[in-house]
Length: 378
Image (cartoon, rainbow, N blue to C red; front, side):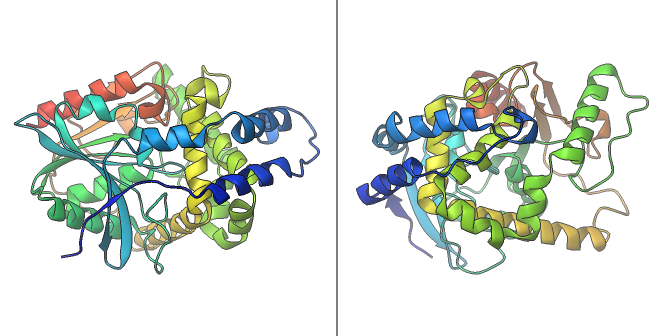
């Protein structure tokens, strides 16, 4: 059995100095409109980059993140970084939390303390993200392989039964876990889902109730003009990698655009929706670990696996066997529509605030929803 090793974040000062120098030497492009219609506007990004260079305190963030117990282990030749926060509750059950793109386990930093009052928490970094880098060989973008690795991780930690939560790509991992480890998973809780698949058909709006129609319209707009990031990463990740790996400003813009588009629609700017220092800590993790490039490759491989499965007719035929209880929480920035769900649901929640990163945006709502669902699972 591979060893589980304690881990602490310790970014070299030379890397911090290099980041500041690179930010100061940004070659700012000319812009045409000055608004968000063509991407992140220069004025906004300049202000954020200046704060990243001269106001943001990485060492304070590093110290705060290191308050969470962290570890690494090797699975199938790949280093996997994870948080493991054990509860003091004598009857605590285990819960596995998986983040998506563009994120890290620290997406859950605002909810860990409260959830760990009741649950043992295991929060891994997806391969190619954060400190689960570098990636040793192709294939780690395949979510089936990731789900299999997570079962191995839970074995090593001694958890025979566990609940799972996933968001974005992590929702895909959670769903696969409910199939390949149905006898072990007590329940599957999802956020960051959507009304359909990115490259699938548009949502048919006829017959939908008003709130669902609005979500369907938003999803269709996303398909029409919001898939550029996915098209590039799913087809030419290496070409994109040079910019993300060489320019912190480029990496900043690439992530900030998604926070602008996917967080609570009522929030004007990304750092209105989430704490600015937490947002920049996330971007910093991508920068220091080179995860911009490796997560793009993971997305490429994930989409390749999805296309192969789709061509093989994986989603056609008879009914799927019954699995563990399944719940979905939908926040204001999401597009998920209950009537379009093709699997039975044991838990459904809708919220008028929050968005694609609810653990960062509305931690109290996220915590209570997850806790309510897991308690129902027994």
